[in-house]
Length: 368
Ligand SMILES: C[S@@+](CC[C@H](N)C(=O)[O-])C[C@H]1O[C@@H](n2cnc3c(N)ncnc32)[C@H](O)[C@@H]1O
Image (tube, rainbow, N blue to C red; front, side, top):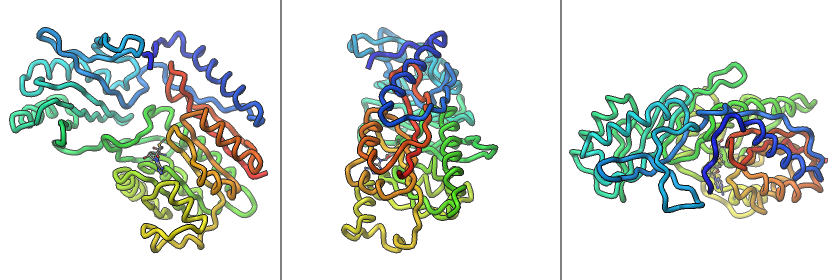
């Protein structure tokens, strides 16, 4: 991908272009005017990865442009990175440069930060890590007040913990999340808070119907990012996710936020769709009283590929579908597949990825 040109003077124009495309791509589905949620124009990314470029006696952070992939673009810091990362970058580079044990054969640095100000750094090497590395890494973690993980082939050394503690403010509440290195987290924390608040507003509208809110089925729930925010607005929740680490984090996050009406099952969306369609019996569903749920709403936040055929078939049976998508193309195909049963009742645009052509979209689909 070409590197984005991060220039706050261009912020409104780039967003306007993406919104115009969103409106025209979904015009045939009578898209209501989307609610628009802007990003901070700088320092919005809570995750960032850089190569480390060794040249002469120096190391520097480097990025590569797909137009000239062999030519490193050297960086001191990065304007898209959240403040804790942007401030840390030069200090970390200097510390790595000054230590032979930390510098030798390092080729990548991954940052994971939180709005609450924590920072976790993964240092990735082309050599096995030894006791000298660990001693130096412990000193680095203490000096910079960060979490440090060392990685090389078949090796992962966690000095203290491999997660950060995020706190998100949503509708006047402070929601707490453990976010694990290497597993999915929403990259733009400010925009994530808007997504959670918008999803809650849609769920409240569903809950205002005469029959009450009913139960929620959530697919692709990750570490419980939306589950924690939405569960209090429904009777009961069945939440599913494929990644083991994310499911573990989701259990912790539900407990830490006092959410007690959620059953979590580690299952692929294809499997849960099959189970709900009366397909084969799944051992992981044992003890889950599927027939006892009164689902009113399906919440989905799939990866870029969107929904598979089985999940589309499942979705057709729901009165409300709340859909968060990071890929308008697959969203459009999925909305087309649901168009005979569902209409778009509300829409949102979340600018998670400023200065790129990517737009995060939210839709509430209602049964016709
Ligand atoms: C866009 S993320 C959303 C996660 C979560 N909703 C959040 O806000 O952090 C998509 C999630 O889907 C999971 N996933 C990918 N393919 C899946 C599948 N076939 N079945 C179930 N989960 C899947 C990924 O592990 C990831 O956690």
